[in-house]
Length: 210
Length: 210
DNA sequence: ATGCTAACGCGACAATCGTCGCTCTAGTCG
DNA sequence: CGACTAGAGCGACGATTGTCGCGTTAGCAT
Image (cartoon, rainbow over all chains, first blue to last red):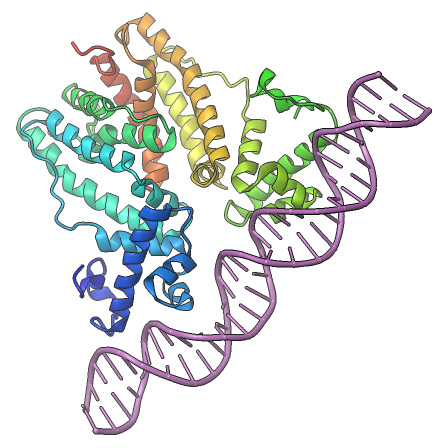
């Protein structure tokens, strides 16, 4: 984690009066403690006190800066979201969507369930909700190139709504694994990807209806 | 609420030694208080103590029987889930899916956000999670007739996976409104429904790939 | 070097949460 | 009608949560 990374998502907007000082160190210690606690005790076993104790930072400081567990997770999320994540590029729309879905599937079924913990936190804290929203929005925006390439190859109509297609491909994973809590099914990513690719080829997800 | 409804979802499995007695009354009072509290103070402002005070039932009793807020919401959910909900029947697959999606959309965007509160609770309590799972599973099961009728009309292949089609139609709503937290878009239900119907007609969601 | 100030450490505090053992009451059954 | 018992009422308790004011310190500037 770069010492000057606090400005990553805020750029010039933040005052950030002392970028490289003690606050930064505290921040790093806390973020590390949050991640450690998350994987070790799970989301529900985690509390401000736990994190404070583990990080060696005082309770009151943690309360002041992050307010609640959701705020902590938001911080951790912003700190760890890789800025260099590349969308898959396999040469076909179905292949790209499959690769993408495999990643999503892996994230949602890994143990301990970090992704699920973050989603859960987003329901309890505005901070966490906004952080997660930023992350997803960023990822979906990057993935739009997948659709552009597909259009170039003739696998989708030129006026295909990229975001809608991407959501159609991935939403069944989130829905099944996170909300409906279906047992993990290894075929799910492929099926959802193929269904979406097929639908795109058939002319779905277009801006204007034919 | 019927006085003997506790057995609704449990049938013969529960001992239920005293079906019509004081316990039942307490249960009703508590469920009523839960619903009132939920709409009045929202999910996060709600606590065991609040509900106990409002219902006139003692704190300790509520703790004993329901353990936490999630348990309370699970109870309320089981108590209020209408057993006579009929899936839409408009005469076409796209129409049925649209009607279904309109219902989902309404539930997810209503104020106060009861549905979202229940989903949030499902991440914090196994009880609530299971109750919600039961409800969704029940609804999706009932909706399978929509696909059967569509197959009969030739709007989908006979080996179409009903559940998969239904999920494809509804998942974008949940994903967009609950997880991605996009602003409500009145066109969303129609688009998702039409995309799914179009995909089905094009041969997606089939058990065996051609 | 020396002063300035944002931020942290610290401990005390009230509020709330959840549990426990006991008593009492209201249904149920002989 | 009388005995039995599951379950509710009750209050006290320890643990945890979140807040506050005050003293201290570390980074920055001149």
